[in-house]
Length: 321
Image 1 (cartoon, rainbow, N blue to C red):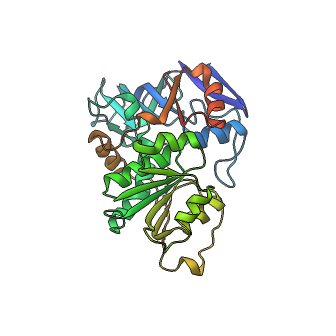
Image 2: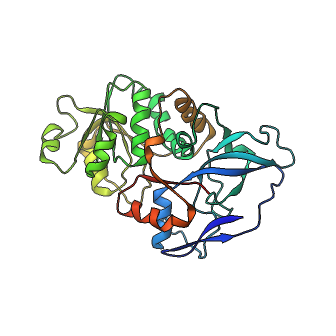
Image 3: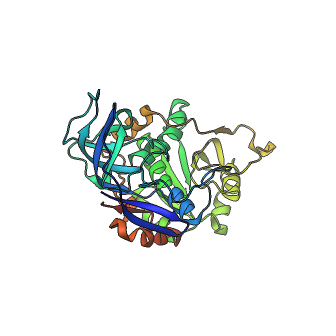
């Protein structure tokens, strides 16, 4: 079967590999649509580790780093009881980069790592369930704290995760959702779709409107989806009560005396309840993932897709193997 393999930084090829056979507890899925995860794709393409201290062996595992996918069950392994051949499923958890990834025609998933897709939900609306699960991990603690409903909310960074976070804040009853994003195209897309308004954090007018955490009509809760030191500092200096740090953290941040009263919520790790929560929002029409896919391409044009991501001309690329 056909699968993508990153041979070296900046060089990916479609190769022929053996058809995977599902083992005990595994489900083989015919991939219908698989989306990029820009962080993973861009880091591997550049030869840079995703996490500090990580080593990247090339050629990389075939099919990787594809993990945001939807497909149809093609075969089931011994002991699988929750799924049947012909059933549509989506992956909610990345099983790890030691296993064949989803940039392929077929892929094996652990039974526990996929969820059934409701019939009315189209492929583009569910393929990025795994990312939605990740974002939900940051949203659910804020919900339990009573920090969202009726509050003025904000999202820092309007990439794919930020677009999802904003919709989840809306779904949880935030009185308004403001986005901060320097890229004008992303601000335009987000306005109306995900946020009530999108502001450029570099614009002096933004700083005049939100000079500090205690200003009139201040922001009360926020989710950082940027992760850059200056961006996180900007956000912590302008949100009054609760900030959840979602983006991959590669730096240290200072909790200063000016942050007194601010609760910072870290990332608790992936879990199925977050995936089920995200799926419920999708099925209810409260979370729309379709606009995140800027273009669909065949696997053979993977390099073109990565270039669009690097140039910030696309949020996500969808591939149909």
